[in-house]
Image (cartoon, rainbow, N blue to C red; front, top):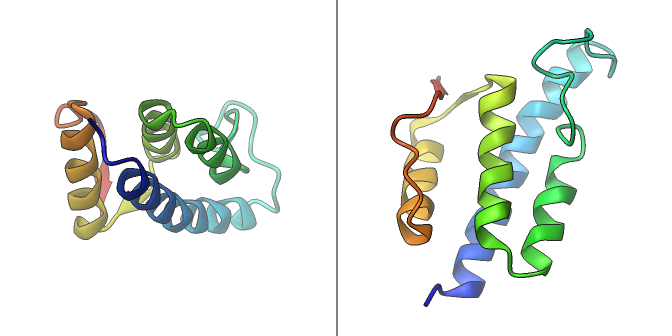
Length: 105
């Protein structure tokens, strides 16, 4: 059984960090992403709210998938420590992310 509070806390913390990066990207385009661009996707501007909504219903896999979507869709680079955390959470949830597209700083 998944350790609910630990997984929820870890996903929530990482989501906040990723949201900060996404918010910076939105600021660069005055919060008006070019239609069809990486930022012009659903639930990126308020991705942290979407993740927290899933977590509030103990939907850890959906929360993690949305967090990963935020990273993958925007193409934002992440730190190696953030990737390590993604890997650890994915292993707990039994989700394979090793073949997915992530940019590193």
